[in-house]
Length: 223
Length: 223
DNA sequence: CAATAATTTATTATCGATAATTTGAATTTT
DNA sequence: AAAATTCAAATTATCGATAATAAATTATTG
Image 1 (cartoon, chains in turn blue, brown, yellow, cyan):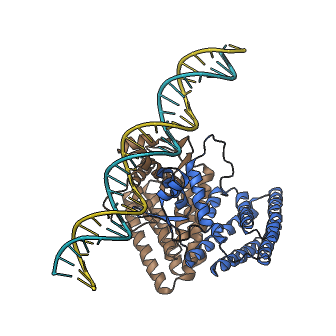
Image 2 (spheres, helix red, strand yellow):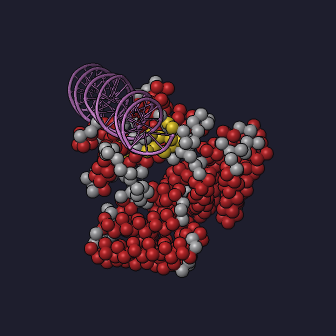
Image 3 (cartoon, helix red, strand yellow):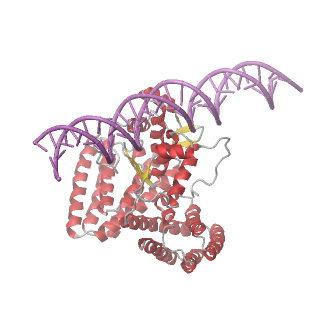
């Protein structure tokens, strides 16, 4: 789920904190917990059969991720994004992704670029299947994987971390763009980006990226 | 201390969690806790006369801020930044601050720009005093205030939040640049940025910014 | 009846204790 | 003596209970 920590070492016992975090996240993304609603510690403790402590820590994690907001002594609520929040998010996301494309083109040698191209092509292939199937959830995951792969190729982990935070792909699935045609179009826009990168055409790549992300935002804003 | 939450509402009782967070942060910045050293929950609980719970939550906060790293069941250590980490941090910081300058110049009307200019001039004045006194701690605060003021003027809170996270001003004070001359020079470079912004000279402002931040990084790298 | 004060309820923040896990030393085995 | 094993100490993760706080409700007063 999280783009940042792919390698989870084996452990005997599961961390409740992680389970709780995932459970609450799931509740948010599934719509069970809607923006602005309260996240009551004792409720989730009872619900998941744990005590309050781990729930508090899980909430702390979610807050760092920007999914919820906590006010001392008052409690936690699912974050409610204003239109401006969304715009700001996307605008910063474009800024970071543009940098990653510029850096990738500037820093990678031909072999590395070929490899990146290959990775991206693979992702786009899967993305196409998702589009055909109309599987929005899987589609957004591939979408995230695409952009993350570019950033990862630059080796700049700070960039990856910050991008992950302003990436609201997680919220995106509430969007109305669920029809197959729209998804296909989105997949195509990625192909343009990929092609431009592979021929080291920085200006085009960034331009296609901006169009792509902007159209994502527009889709969200119509909600 | 934190650039993000200026308004702290009045509360009867203090949050231990916050006190603990500040105490540990202070220990890190003062050098008492060096990079790579362990942050033992029970130690700080005893040290501050609290229980373990709030300490864990405080550590969670510090982790979100990137000051420490936690591995489940193993514990927490003060984050050890590699040279590459520092470079990546600064490179992203330049990216975000460049955007903030571009946005400020593009979005603010004359009156708003005048107001920003005024604010920045005030900060620079204080910064000069800090340089003369050789007060590095206060100087870095003014430095942060300068850049934060520009970002804040764009009204993009996402940008501000992410910038705060990749801003390693907090680590900067370990740097060797403690002599008055260097601080004065740094203050001057801010004046160039300010001047360029006030005449809406985007290219120069960004260029000065890059020079400034790069020189900060170089200073850090010599450590 | 409105406005304020007192009270109850719901919830968060913290505590002290215990279970689970890792680490490192002591012990045994080869 | 080196390697593997067992054990003990240190530390983390969790629990159940209590104290503090905020919100909601009821009671009181003018």
